[in-house]
Image 1 (cartoon, rainbow, N blue to C red):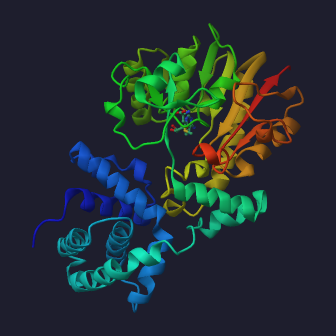
Image 2 (cartoon, helix red, strand yellow; image 1 turned 135 degrees about the horizontal axis):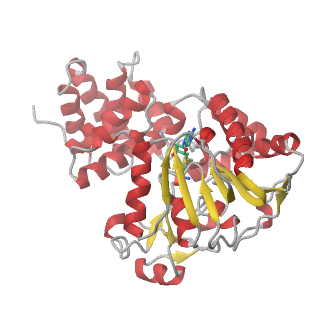
Image 3 (cartoon, helix red, strand yellow; image 1 turned 90 degrees about the vertical axis):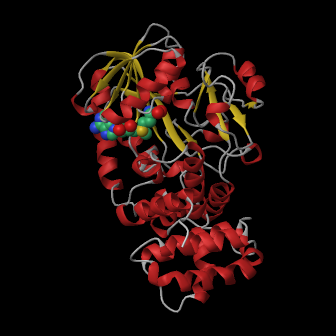
Length: 418
Ligand SMILES: C[S@@+](CC[C@H](N)C(=O)[O-])C[C@H]1O[C@@H](n2cnc3c(N)ncnc32)[C@H](O)[C@@H]1O
């Protein structure tokens, strides 16, 4: 039996790692490292597409399965179903999925099942696919989001997740020049957006570090700090460094702190590519000491605002860590306030859709710290509808629907007088 294609085999390993070990697709370099760049990109795309279409795939597969097969076999069927229903060539997909089953000791016995089921899906799946509902988020996440934002808003978010995300770049200098060079458009907030699929490293300006990849929402927190020229700024959870690059490009004297050495290496690479500089510190934010004019706290969170790009996340965990993360965010915010000079500015941000990681954190911090207040967030492109009751900004993936959406984010600009 021929070997399966390296990209499909890696995609299957990536999917298995999410379900079996709760390891998100973006944290599986060991699976992708041996592959050629094109196979790596194809594996990532196949795995992400499988998670995006998982609910539809499971619905189509259910009538063909008398009992649920072993997890890896189920994942081969899901991978094949999504490909077959989104334009994959029937013969090539079915035979390679059979090869995938044949290649594993625990899956060999299911070759026949894979072949029979995927042949049926190849004949009637593509028509049925388009008639199925837009996939929903898993209940552990959907229920609290419906409680926070209402069912209509959550359906709109799911439509945005299903549509996927364009590519956003943050320019180091003039946005118009970058937009012209890459064939993109300048968004009202100053990011440059490309609506077509591209190989990022082949775009003009990549080698010369004229821009970096960063969602338009993720580019806003650093802008809320305003003019940071010559200020001592702490980027408290810095890696992989998008916001460090913005602050350094704006002329700040940046200390970029992160717990993870491996992730700090990404900050170092990004600084080198863009010719920018910052002081890198590996360590626990809660133990860091210093005195800063401004602080950016982009706290670790559920990342539920990024499901357009990371549809695997709600399957990697069922929200078990969220309570722990909320405690960490609170402790980090309190510690950051200790490191901030009186009158200094602090941005608290999370790429989460859950108010417990955003609005509630700021409301509770205001009640714990009498000298703390929220300043009005000002930056180009901010819409009045984004402003939340306690004075922060709430961005959701269903916003900017006519422009291609924006990641979910929360951010607030704080200052401390005492
Ligand atoms: C949301 S990400 C930061 C993204 C980054 N600001 C950017 O724009 O590229 C959160 C980061 O917090 C780091 N982190 C988690 N716990 C930490 C801690 N106790 N101290 C410092 N960094 C921590 C993680 O390693 C991760 O890189």
